[in-house]
Structure formats: structure tokens, C-alpha cells
Length: 296
Image (cartoon, rainbow, N blue to C red; front, side):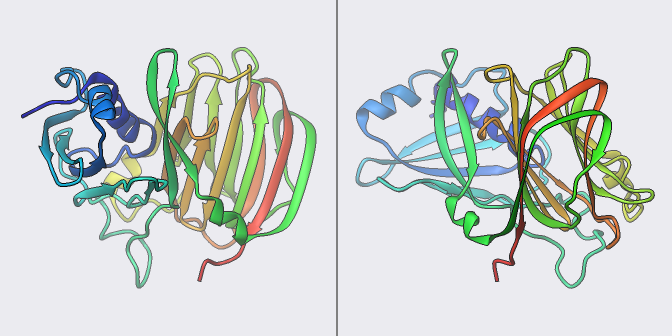
């Protein structure tokens, strides 16, 4: 029976719109421990027509558990995604950081794919709506080395930072300036730059790899260069938590309210890092950086 309430559908909307734009068409299977109270909260009405999830089906299992199946969008780009939430355990999600459209053509050897960073999942009610919050797991902090911190940096145009590399973690916050676009340049080289930015006028967070030169291995990769999502400032500020691991960039915005992941393939010398601000002077309150050890 297709049964789920609108708030639960919005949870899937967050999965697709704010963190997993490449999972359109995926078969989805989630196992949930559901009390009667929680069941009434989550599955009280039919799926709204506007939701990206279709054909939801709820099947009772043993021990007050239910199996929820559904389908997202229209085109199959990923294998089945499964998420298991156990009672009294923090749910953790791993995503596939690739796209079937160009997965076999990416310029890596011997591996052709990788998983995203593991994320802790939670729900937060904001303005009467439930949001799916995704945060990098605490265990990742054990990989931090060589900490550095910069404060009160005013940027007009762009400013190079002391860090150079392709494997690091970074946090910073800033107050958007009217009619400006500000953020971070990664993998900066003579002809290469990856952009993470926030447009204050449209209130959109975006990632853009159109200025990354190593994209000729597949025409679809080059055409899928710009992605954006809505993001409202919190206390008039935007907070970004960014991981770069050579070919994968992951962005957690406003403590996990929006999440974006992208693939890039910079040359070894494309390792510069810059703050930027177009259309006004932006003050970055606090910039924290860590190099990261290998997890292996």
C-alpha cells in the first residue's frame, strides 16, 4: 500500500536535492524500527504528487519494524541504495561518489569509484518542516594533522591561503554581502579551478567544475558541471565544512542542512586554495584547516 506522510517524503527530497543529486531513478529500500507513535508521525498520509519519491510501499516486519520501498525519479543512475536504522543506534549513511553516466570513463586506475565520507543522519524541524541533517562522523577528526587557523579575513576579488594540497579538511563562516558571490577556490592551478560559492542574491549554494580542465574523457561529465541548492543564512551567516580528497570534494553547509559532493580530476600541481568574493568585500570570520592522514 502506498503510504507515507509529506514530512517523510521531504526527507527523501533532502536526500535527492541536497546531497545525492545523482541518485535519480534509484530503487530505495529502508528498514526502520517504528513504534506506533513514530509510525503515526511518519506515515499518516499519501505521498504528495510533488515528491521525488514514487511507489512507496510499507510492509510490516517482526519486532515493530517496517520495510519501506520506493523509487526516486525516472532514470537509473545508481545501484540500489539501502539504509538500515537500528534501534538506539546513530544512523550512518555512505553514498556512492560517482555517476553511471561516466563511471567507466573517469581517468583513475585501477579503481573507478569510491564511497563518500560516512555521515551521521538526524532530523531537525525548521519552520514546520522536517529536514534531513547530514554531518561527517566524529571519527574523521582522528585523521586531522597540522592544524591552522586564520581570523577576520577581508576579501575583495580573491586571496590565496597558506595551505597547498589535495587532501585536507576546512571550516569557515562568513556573512553574505548584498549582490555578492563568495566562497572558496580549490585545486587552483595555471588553468584549473574548482569553485564552491554562495550567491547572496539568489540564496543558492553551488559547486562548479566548468573551469576544471581535465573533463574531456566523457562529454556528459563536462556537461554536468554546475549544481546548486537553496540555503538560507543562519544568524545572517553561511557556514561551510569542506573535505577535499584528491578527486572528491564534499561540502557540508550550515551544520549539515545542505550537502553537496562532486568529482574532479586535477593535475598534481593544481593544489592552490583561495577565498574569493565577487561583487563586494566579504569578511571571513574564522578559517580552520587541517591536513588529513590516510584512513588506511
